[in-house]
Image (cartoon, rainbow, N blue to C red; front, top):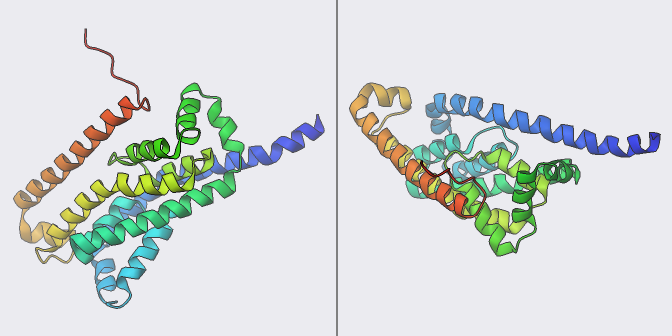
Length: 250
């Protein structure tokens, strides 16, 4: 009995550590995202003052903070579009996303070991999803991860944690992340670049000088684009069996 308890202790410790990390990665990024958007002008001006290394600094910080669940990807994509424009901002944000996905994935794999796999398999639906992601061909795993990454509300850090802990392979993860997150990153950087093109230094100045009409129109267009991406992704996820189908209307 004692030996069994000793054997299970490391597994329980790893599982509890992953759960604690999951709670942290659910709560911290939104709070830090609001902080970054509030300091958009200050941070953006500092990056612009580094003409030689500003882009590389942005990519490196994006990768580290998103990989370790400190900052959300949407806020950093807004910063990228605001400072570097739609083309360079999107490219830099995608590099940061891929770096963050790799960091979060391997970090989760190191701290979780094999403890989370057994925990996931206790839930029938969790077992089905893990099996679809881990035991399928790399092509199918890539397509499923692409679909899971596509919705605008898909949590980045938690997804890295879940996929790293459940045993998903690295290459399909990175490929699916790149294609799955590109549409919403492009839309976000484009909206931020359009806002920055007004000459505003930050959101407060944008609201004061531009007026609510222009902002409302731009915000509505931005939300419509994200809703279209979300609708397409939900339909694809349901077709793949990763989301429950809605019951037919009576």
